[in-house]
Image 1 (tube, rainbow, N blue to C red):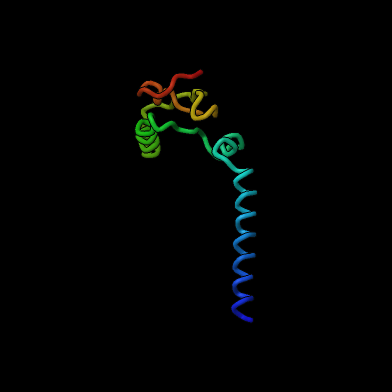
Image 2: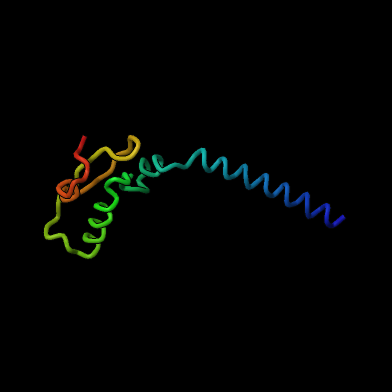
Length: 95
C-alpha cells in the first residue's frame, strides 16, 4: 500500500511539475525579458567576443569617456542599447 502511494505521488508530482514548466515556458522568453527590461540586449554569437570585452572594460572603468548609447537591432527582432564604442569595434550598426 505504501509503495502504491509513493508511486502515485511521484506520478502526480511529475505531472504537476510538467504543467507548471509548460505554463512558465509559454510566458517567459528572452524576447519578453528584453521587452520588460530584464535584459539590455540580445547579443548575437558573431559579436559575443566584442560584447564581453566591452562589458569587462566598462566594468573595470577602462572607458576613457562616456559614450551615448545607441539603439540597435539585435537578436531575433529585439532591441538593445549598445555604446558607440561597441560599434567602432565592429558591432552592429543601428537599424
